[in-house]
Amino acid sequence: MAKEPGLPPGGSSSPGTGDERADFWEATFFSPDGNQIAEQSASDKAPKPAVTGPVETNDTAYEKRIAREAFSDAEKHADDLGEAMHAKFMHLLSAKIEEKNGHLTAEDVEEMGEEFKNNLEDIKTALLNAVESYTLARERLRIESARHDHFSRLLIRKFEHRFRDERKLQNEPEYLSRRMIPGFSNMLSLMFGKPQLASYQKRIDAVIERLKHENNGEMNWGLFYRSPEIKKLTLRAEIEIAQNFKDVNKRMAWMVAMINSNLIPADARWMGTEWTFNEEAAGKLLAALFSDLRAALSNANARDRIGQSLGDEALTTLDMVAARFN
Image (cartoon, rainbow, N blue to C red):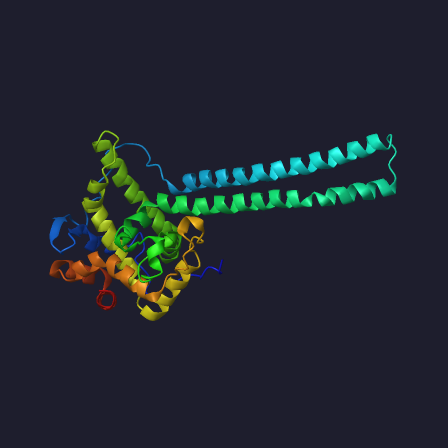
């Protein structure tokens, strides 16, 4: 795997989690066509989830559990390999001692070593199985972690219509493979930073818990995606991502490198395609991702709020990004 690109180059710094200005414009919610659907005062407190007690976060505990399972699988193969090697050696040793009535010479030891060496092919196979098991377990961790990341999934949903079956991508490389999902999640992690991602995740978890509480423990994802809190959160995330594209060409190159360096390897499960993420696919992905941003910028009320919150320079950047990825 290629070396993972570092932090995103260039771009404007995004509003911090404690920036009151960043909450000012997001007090108004908009539908995809730009119509205002709800409003609250910037000084209003955010609605609390209906359940009491701490909201359980998903990411850290879940990833640790999957990592433990991955290590356990690999450890079992390693233990089996060690036991097999020990059993083979003891069998050869016992047989040779019995044959020589308990008296071994240097020649006997050498002969026994040669016989053991002849069995190394089986040991090599066991070792390769252990390595493969660990590698697959790590890939499973990457996939499961991406699936469990509600913030990433919220944004991926905006361009999921561009995913194609791996067999079709050779003729339609401008579309997307699901093998890129871990790379997209890594990209978000570097753009936002862990504290900001944790803040987003906490707010998403609160909405999920509230909806579950209101629906007798069942989760209605349709209501989740239509909820004002999630629409507000999505727009805020789009604006922060867009500000990272002030230097569009440099950021596009970084994005392509980041996702390609984290592609899930193509194997039999993925039809062995040679698809890689490219700038054309990236441009269309971003056009779908920034749909709420374009709607907000075309709405006079929303545009005014964004300008008051972030300033004219940031608004100019958002206009440029929205026009570029349309």
